[in-house]
Length: 59
Image (cartoon, rainbow, N blue to C red):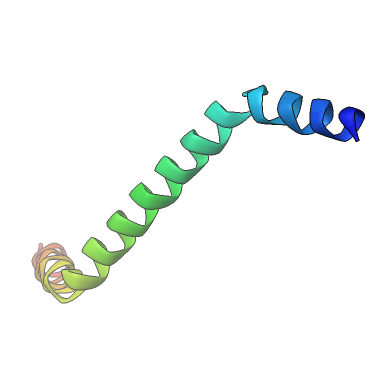
């Protein structure tokens, strides 16, 4: 039983890899924010690119 307690205590103190997980969560949150933002303004981007396309086609 003491071996199990010692193993669990050591596991609780181990912080190796925690930074990588935190960075992964930050990247996932930023990706979600960018995706939702682009989804929200997608029609406006489409209008801008259509206007640019029409202007270039007329040139």
